[in-house]
Image (cartoon, rainbow, N blue to C red; front, top):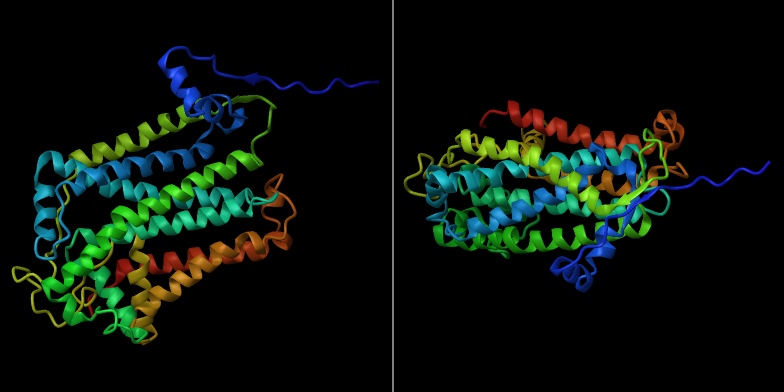
Length: 384
């Protein structure tokens, strides 16, 4: 008895005419988008997270570009500029949207990486995809922590302050001109703020663009891995329909962020201690000692500093952030090499096969333990 081969239904978008067709031909967009076929099952929430993340990053870059038109990395003026923007109706929406979208990006990065981990999406010769995702997460962290500094309140001032602590810990603060005395001087602090500004508006976005393009290239070449809870039908659809799903979910998520930006006011915080008008001017303490706490996505860094400084009595406490970064980065990098499964899980039982995936789950758990511990301690911490 001969069984006929299973047919696959292929859905392609009709060829366009006119200017759109010319643009598609000249830039090979039809081959990249409309004629690039993917499994129909990818049009679901789990498989739109990466696309929504990409759109959120684009929006973040665009709003960031607008803010460069009115912001100046001057240690004596930056706080006042931020405060003025937050009190100006239209600019307040722009800066708040930029601020809250960063939270969305952080959440999407974590959700996306955990979905890929659970489904073993790095199996089948796709370890490079995972490692590229880890680098992307590091770039997002760099963008977030430098953006935090640009607010230039006492919390933002803590970023160069902690950089100075690190240089002091390794004996290079004087050589790098990154001492506390220099940071408390407006001219010296302006130089450092300018460096952080350059990282935020040029280096971080360029790295993100490079690795996003590489990430999508590898996905196209190596193929999309379906999660085990979706049964593949064999249908193929144009990638353009998947992009439409990205836009749909992005509209919902970023629309909510826009409403939050319009209707929820946000203050500028406390002026940094190096400004004479600050209530903290002349303080003998650093930002942490004055009660400054970083915002949620990087709050674990301050929490780890408190663990090392107040609980373990390790001085300087910046080693808490360093150790935390090493644990998180090491855990993420090692995942595809510690996972001993020979292929992506085909069911829930295989997904939680501790014999094959136990070490991978252990390091992921260690990463989450570090971050959650840091978040909780940061939330409960009181000034020294």
